[in-house]
Amino acid sequence: MLAVALLLAPAAANQAPSRVVAIGDVHGAYEEFTEILQTVGLIDGRRVWTGGTATLVQTGDVVDRGAKQRECLDLLMDLQRQAPKDGGTVIPLLGNHEVMNVIGDLRYLTPDTFRTFASPEAEKRRESARKDYLLFLSAHTGHGHEVVPPSDGEARQKWTEEHPPGFFEHRDAFGPDGQYGKWIRSNRAVVQVGDGIFVHGGINPALAFESVRALDERVVADLPAFDAMWKELVDARVVWRYMTFAEAVRFAAEELTWQQSEGPVGVFPARMAVLRLLAYKTWVTVSGDGPLWYRGLGTEPEGKLDASLTAMLERLKATYIVAGHSVVASKEVTARFGSRVFLIDTGMLGEVYSGRASALEIRDGRFTAHRVDTMPRSLPPPASAKVPALVR
Image 1 (cartoon, rainbow, N blue to C red):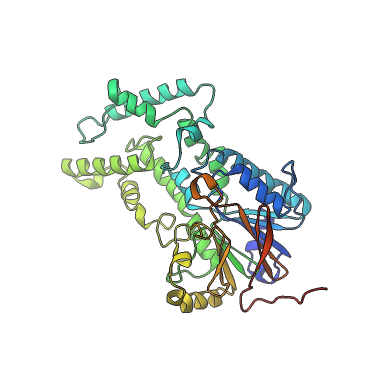
Image 2: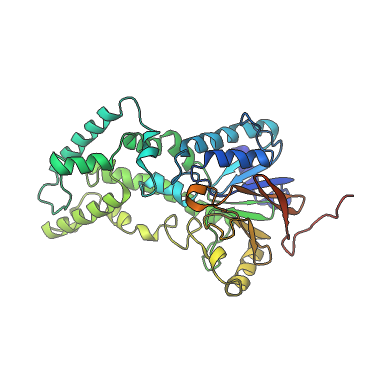
């Protein structure tokens, strides 16, 4: 944590580590993630840190889609503990999919992935949860909710399929006190290392913010705010604690409508929490213009953003931005805007994106793209970056 704090300090731009390696979206591709870490010399065959004083920045989206997200999380967490012993640093950033797992947006999780979280008592736990859910719903009888209680028959079968073994263990693991949830909540969203800014999605030049640190704090603050809101809603019995995000939004909206029809809305317990939940599209962690979701640096014509991007980088005293999130069509680490933007999501999870694991290395002012079983490829540095002469 001290190493990360130093990297985030205002003086960090003048004290850049000599070697930085950035790796983009993993999405549960454990073997591929391990291979690229070995290719760039950060780990050995036993998954032990061998990167010395290097800094590894993983730009988020370790989870979802692929089946081995637990192995990927465990490896990254382990390397974060190992690296400082050799003077190295591992900086895991928040991706939109980490936030989705925290808030209960589970669209990209499969039954197979849930099963990796299942405890020996998973079946008993699921049945206990179903009974608790029925008890919760009974308190809302007549409130105009569309949900069908999973008492028996088709409703029960449907509910069981929607909550496979490991579902509840997964929710707990990503909760505020869970193994992964606690760690995710300790991570940053936007960091500046040397003269480069690292982020999951990108930074919209039109977004109003004072500094990298201020933007990072704004994003990170959404998670404890969500936890407080969720606890208030659960304690007030407005939502059930294991509802998915979509279920909670729908149920809270229906409950608010019923409360408004019954009397003064001001007496509705947790009214402000409900309104905050229903306004989720304004959250910076969910907004398409926020740093976790913004895709413009990869999709907009360069001429459209060039001037505003240049002005933003100058204001932030940075030279370039490194971002993941948007899979590059070529499946290669790609430079845009005169190498002021580097896109590093190359579709590591081949079964979904047909890509390969890649990494961007920044060392002594040189920018190099690495792929497994492929020769490293030099990339042009940003125009204002200082590149040392070749040593022959």
